[in-house]
Every structure is written in C-alpha cells, then in structure tokens.
Length: 337
Image 1: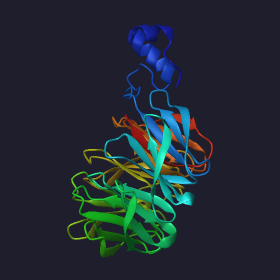
Image 2: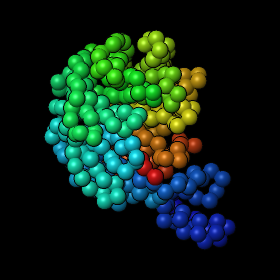
Image 3: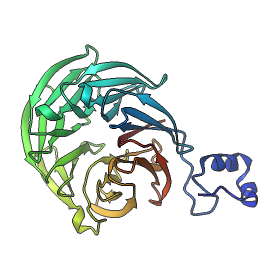
C-alpha cells in the first residue's frame, strides 16, 4: 500500500508517518490496519534449509539462519531464548540461539522428525518420527531420548495439554489421534478422526483439543476428559475456496479465535470456537501449510509452500497487507517479540 501523502503525513505526525512510510503496510485512513508491535517471524524452509527472518514492522526478510536439512516444525524454548527446529533429513532438533541468530547445538530426535511439542515445564520435547511410526520423548537437560512410543503410520501433529498430562500425536496414515500418558509414556487411547490428520492444539484452558484433517477438510474438536469427538467442523460445507484442505492451526491466547491454513485452498479460515462457525476466509498464497499470529495478535502469517512466499494478513480485516518473497518452500512459521 502506498505511504501517506504529504498532507496526510502531517496529520499523522512526523514519527507515525515515518514509521508508516518505512513499513509500507498501513495508511492513515479509518480503514487502515493498526500498527503491529515490534516482532520477528521465523519461517522454516524445507527446500533451502534455512529459517527466513522477517521483521514484523517492515514485513521484509532481514536475514537467514542456516539449519540442518529439511527444517519443518518449530517451537520456542520455555524461556523464549532459543528456537527448536526439526531438521528432518538430519534426524535431529537444531537449537537456534535467538540472540546470535545461529544454531548453537542440537538435540536427538529419533528418525525423520516433523512436528514436536515442548512440555509445559520446558524440560522435554515430544517428537513425531514420521518414517518410524513412533513418538520420541527427549529430555532436554541431558540431551537424551528417554522413551519411544509406537503409534500409527506417518505421525505428524504433536501437542501437549496445558497441565502436562497428555501428549497428543496425530497419525496421518491411520486417521487417528493418539492420547499418550506423559508420565508413563504409555499409549492410552486412539480416536478416529477425518482422513490424514495434520495439526493439533489444545485450547488455553485445556478443555478442548482441535485437530485438522487435511484430505477430509475437517477440524475435529475433542474433549480430553472423555477422549471423544464432540464436534466436527466440515469446511466443505462452509462455502470454502476450491480444493480446500485443513493443515496448520493457530489460536489466540484467550482461545477466542482459531485460524486454519487451508493448503490447496490458498486461504486461511477464521473460526469462532463458541459457535464452531467459519467467519471468513483470508486469502493466502499457493499451498499455505503453516500459520501463526504475531505476539500482539494483530498480524497473521501464512507460509505458502508452492508460491515461495509468506502472506502477512491484518487479523482485524482479513486483508493481505504484504507478501514477503522468500523463494524455496516455506513450511512453518513462528513469531517472537
């Protein structure tokens, strides 16, 4: 979007006008998106073997961090100082020091890690090993795999309940959601959901578990207490874009909104978790796999694997306000202050 003209710049004030001109993201009119608080977005690129570093204020790529081969899933350390990155083709979890912007070490992961979750106390990683149909429990302080749990074929989505009791794994090939006891590393239950479940997230209060199913284009909502599906959101019934899928998940901190990357649908769905209704579809690039909110929840980032870019969406209006060209094959995205 064009920066403010001279007259409107004076009305905005010199400091605000300079910031807007630099960012190129917002105008001064009533429909302009609010300025986002300073932040960074890190985008894993499974083709170029890097993390793209995007400045949230300018929506520009400001650097790249070299990682192991085929980086995909990411998560922040408990203290927010490190970023864990699954290097699938190197069978490890890279540990990125955010202050220096470099890989400072690695953790074992088991073979072919894809997604993983960090325990609430920050001492363990729970890693999906896609090719070996297992979940690895990794003890971070000792850098050891302390347990392995057999699950269904092609495990991918990983989540851990806020109270630390349940480790969740989705099995793409078996269309199952596995409930694993975090204390004993025992598989307690497996629940059938839509075809090829991909991502999983607990609501902040831990009362619901949301699971996307790529091929079926549904989102299952489960009650962790009963381990049963209590609602299924069928995106194909909600006037979706063509070729809609359901892949990555993002959720506001208060649980008031859920966002779903639609894969071949080239959009992001915004869902009201109270009514389970799709409120709108925000346009993204080709084959958006990962989605994340900025720390202040004013921006939505969508990693578009086949168009080699990242869509920056105003979370209020749903309008794409910038497209960051990265090249490669962007897979996942995570943001930090």
